[in-house]
Length: 115
Image (cartoon, rainbow, N blue to C red; front, side, top):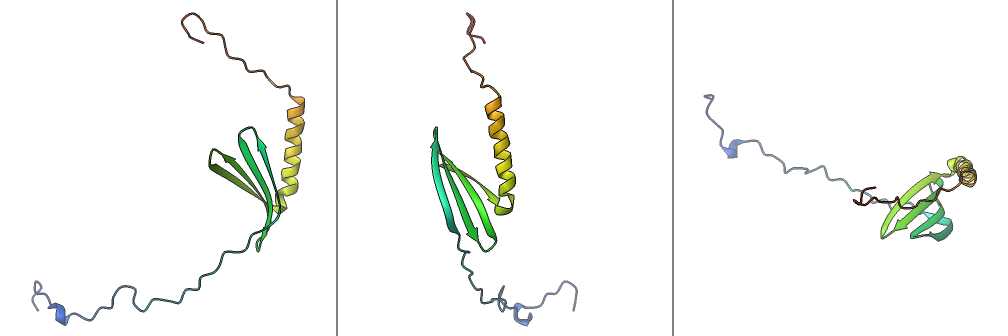
């Protein structure tokens, strides 16, 4: 055969369609159940906080969801870290009580409107 000759498509070896024979029966696994053991909700200023103690096959965890103007932010703390988180909150509460609040007042403007 000369190098520039090509075989007719009928003479090409039969090709199987892509992915044929590779189909497997995929079992759809349901999501693990997440049961809420306890839940509390509070509203602070214009934010809504939902605190839930939940459990799934991986263990227990605390889920804190902050909702503001239709947007949600969530943090999840594993049960193994709840004591550390509690200590951290105690330290922050103590600091908030010890440090006096600053009163924020608008800065006076000069005649040109500059601060």
